Image (tube, helix red, strand yellow):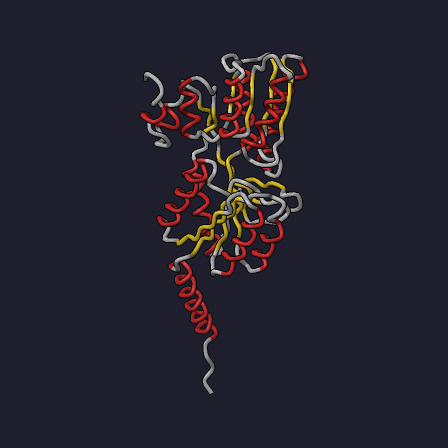
Length: 338
């Protein structure tokens, strides 16, 4: 009986593996994208950018919008997992309520990318976001340079969003030395239950009633900044108050141009979406992700990719959001003489 050369068998195995690997490389993968809501302008941009990035990488994408409802998002994620997706990208409505459903997805051997907001205690495969502590630090540093002394108010983001705590941490790292010196005081701090103007309005109005003037208000995002500006304007004390937000929404950039909002933080979401789509493709192919940082989700150490945010003031609108094509100059300066 003729004995086969063992090297011949090895070559056959390698050829089979090579063909299988090529098929995996050429396979058209499917992303499931679970998004909290489209209430804030930036999420529409993220959706558009991620959809385009997926298309450019020859990937399909199935999208579900939860309309700010955690139970709806849980049901939608289970649905996505049943549709044969290769990767789940999720922007959680509630970092804690989504823990179990993300674990369910992981048990089905579907990789999970936590996009911009981190799901708690769920051991996602990677968290990708802008450096949220730096967002807070940039806001506080920008305010301090303009008003190094006075009364500060912090209007945080939703208490169930880990990003809001990271931003607050960045703010306090910068403000704490000035507080210790007695240069500034924190006249009030608001933690709303959710990212909504209604959750902030009543509490900020009560805070205004207790303070004759406020020098600076640092806001969790531009939507909250808009609410704060409206209340300050109604009480005729906006002129001497600096209001800062983040997301560089068009309306916020218009207010910056009009000098009713002092600054916003610009986060180029096209880069975030492109990075997320690239990671999704690598995870679908079972490739190792390049990660430099790690962050705790409360239980697990999660690979963390963070991008750098950019301060936008009236003097830097042209060289940031307008130069990048994030907003059109005519739209930004629509209500000004420029």
